[in-house]
Length: 110
Image (cartoon, rainbow, N blue to C red; front, side, top):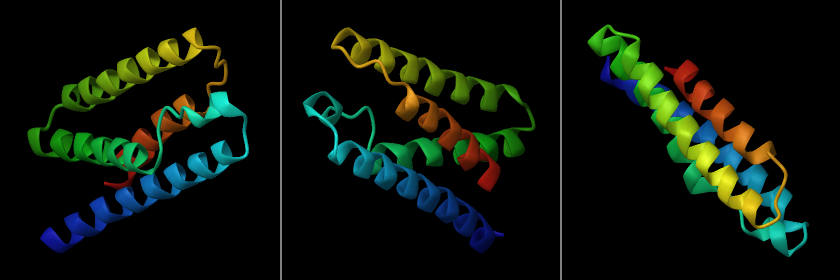
């Protein structure tokens, strides 16, 4: 049981790190505005882990509200980050959408 749990969380961490690496690599070739990333490897790894933990806690506590709350809080933080970036001239939403999808993929890894 514990080995399976570590494997599931490990897969979620790995997927989050891969998405973060891709987003950092995509930002390297851009202009100076794009160097102010919303999220990179560490943030995407934590977002994926949060999604996986949300699914785990939902399974343990047998209530969907834990998952809804954690994903809702992540969504609110992503919207707040987008609002701050948009004030400084950034209009792209690709990284923010990728963050939300990464949280859901992390939940699916569980």
